[in-house]
Length: 171
Image (cartoon, rainbow, N blue to C red; front, side, top):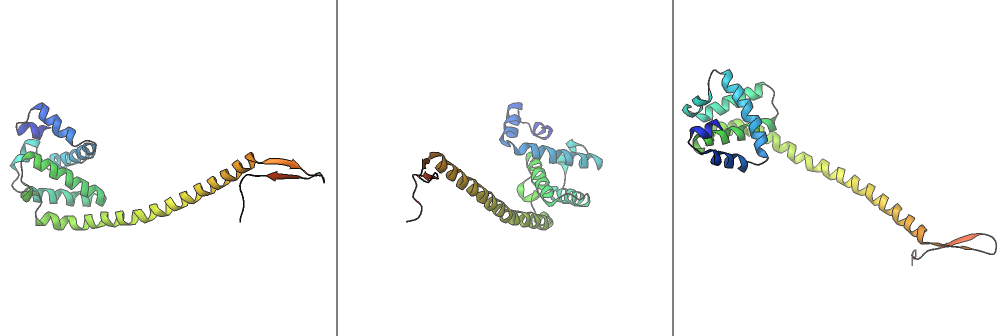
C-alpha cells in the first residue's frame, strides 16, 4: 500500500489493485511481510525500496536468506513471485527484475516444486481408485438390498419359502 501511494495512485486505485489479486493477495501479503522483516533487519526502510540500484540482486540475496532459514522450495517460489510483484509496483521494469542471475538461482527451486507436482497426481489417482472401489461395493450392496426389499415371499407346500424377484439372473 505504501509503495503504491508513493507512486501517486489514489486510494480507489490502490484498492482496485489489491482487489485484483483476489485470494492470492493473502499469500502475497504474508510473503511481502516476511520480506519487510528482512528489509528492516538490513537497516533499510520502505522509502529506500524505490532507490535500489539492482532489484534482481536484492531478490537473489533475499532468496539465499530464505534458503539458509530452511524455507521450502514452494515457499521460495511464492516469495519470489510476491517480491517481483512488489518491485513491479514500485516501478522497476520486468527486465531489471527477472534477469539471468535470478533465473539461475530459481532453477533448482522450480525443479523441486515441479517434481513434487509430478508425483502428486499418481498418488491422487491411487487414492481416487480405492475410493471408487469402495463406492462400487456400497452401491452393489445397496442394489442387492433394494432387490430383496422388492421381492415377494411365497410359502411352498413343504413349508419352505422362496423369494420371487423382478430381476433376472443370468440368461
